[in-house]
Image (cartoon, rainbow, N blue to C red; front, side):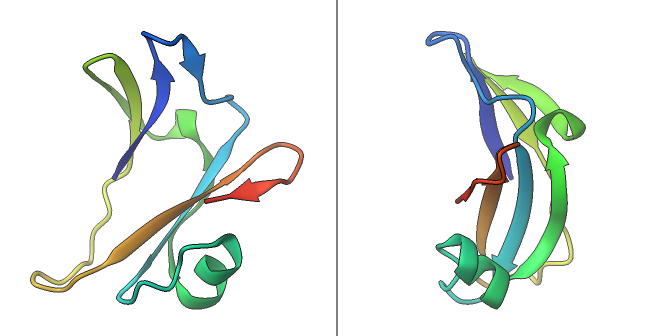
Length: 91
């Protein structure tokens, strides 16, 4: 799974203090912060984006996390909760 942390064309950064927490589910029931915590399985606890692998894809610098233990042929839904230093959370 990968998400952009810097766009060189727009010169926009994801703030370095933002933390990411990942959830997965076999049902489409993790679309909000509260639903992810209630219905999802935590795949990775909070960590800053700089703690993940980072690669350039075109003009975007991405953070990446490889998720394992999934069964082939099974549909999974994945969501990332971002938490700012103020405590505000969003998906």
